[in-house]
Length: 398
Image 1 (spheres, rainbow, N blue to C red):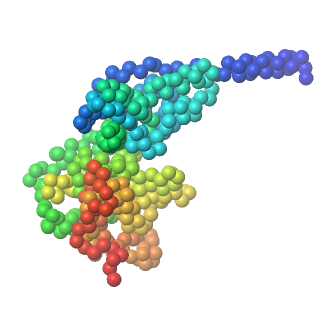
Image 2: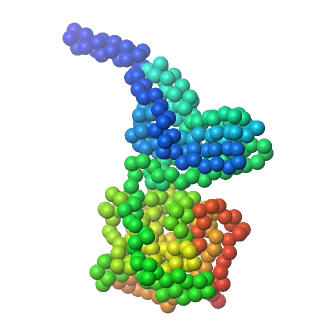
Image 3: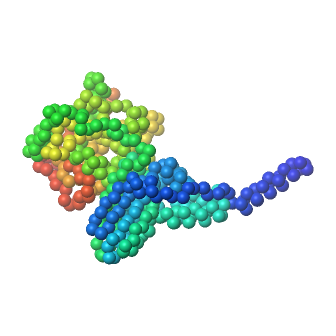
């Protein structure tokens, strides 16, 4: 080794040892100003307990914690509990997110590249800003619980135990910085009042049977998918039910990049999706507000499809469209978002044999049924779900 190369080697080694001794960079963040969160928080009350909740957006989270938590799939939720009662209450974060992250777990997984002093400062910050488990009588306590990220509306519970009783608050909050695809639609003006027909329970079945069977390309000359599901629910209640069942909103930007499907003379009003943990399949649900109501409840016609990865092109649509319909039913069932269900049959049956005999002309096969679901924004026991005596469900026929 020449003298110059030896000197360079020693210099690099010395710098490496020096950097290792220093341990890395400083931890930079801005002290929390809770006023902004408190000003836009939603507050709910039950008895002697008040709960306020807010969700910081992506940039706000970066400022508060000094780390891009959203990019890691972590979303902090800010809570404030005011206990005016005579006994302390206990907050249970598992009600907010069953698989929530502990504060020091988040700090530890982000410790790489920081100095020892910065790591200690990071742990102090995350621990100090976490939501306390207990709120004593007369106290007001606040802090964050670290949940899995939802980039659209954020639905969650805040469960408190006091005096041997459980009090649960349900929140549905908009996440700053995210605009859903339906944000600019005024659902109250889609139809003129005289164009909307209200049906009783007795007349509703025939009305649903007469709804469009399929979507189209916009010009109306090419069918695009089967309308295989009908949801009955008011707007905000519908969104609560969707989030309770882990459906994800689609942003306006994402929706603009997707091929539109038309019904009732317009493209879909909203797109939701349900993604697998393995990221190799997805269920997509497109919804249109129909010009009918079931009593005081809105009626939404839906098209739910199943997509899975197969190489190139990456996503393939499952030709068995009934699979997606049945998944949606089970998903709302286990999400405790379903109050009633019913089935409506039709003669628009495409058997598997027809699909296989001419797969170029048949893009799907189906038994011709659509499922009708009455959804609830509040939890409904699976034992309390009612099945209406409409058409015999598919698979029950002899």
